[in-house]
Length: 299
Image (cartoon, rainbow, N blue to C red; front, side, top):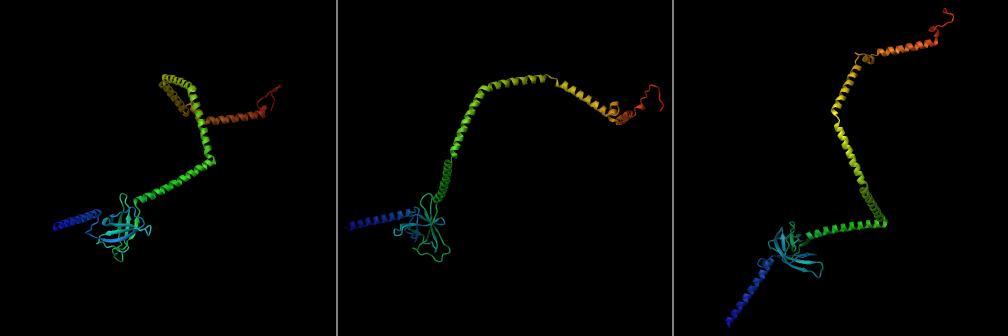
């Protein structure tokens, strides 16, 4: 009988130890160390963004605790109470903040921002100031919403402009003008095709004939002795140059005639004398002409 009791006691003790080890291992996997208790602080949020139990509590990027409990205040809708379990060595001053920081991958966490100028140390069970930091998804959604709003505004402006064009009749007039332009272009294309088919062969034959005539002229020009012709031209120019030199020189008759002004002066004097003689002859002809039937008269 005693042996059975001892055996049952051993079995019960073994079950209790196993259950305790299971509880300790489960909490250890959650990050809870039952042999290292901490201090509890309360934080109330209006939104937790998917915060779960055992989420880390960080200070300067180092884990100093974890989230122990999350409970919704049904008597005060919009309030969510979060219980933080932090290391007992940590001294939290009054005015410190518990910031909910979102994560792109995984659940968010709590980051402590201590107030170094606090007047006193908070006691376990007191509340921290709750704040929520906009996560990356919030920033992306805000930016996306702004772009969507701008796109909607531009679309409205575009539709308003199209509506104005339709009501004003400008769009229909433009379409009609485009149709007329397309018709004219089609006629122009048909005319060009007829020109290419009918007139282009004749034009090409004339061009070929002109090319042949140019070839003949080029052959004739190539047969001309340009060297002898230029030599004759140079000889003629030399003769003209020598004649010009002689005409400018006073050492010959033509040069004296062209360069000596005495001949010009004499000619002027002779013309002046001849003019005076003719005038005198006209006024007193008897002085130069003597005619008498009865002989010479005395004067």
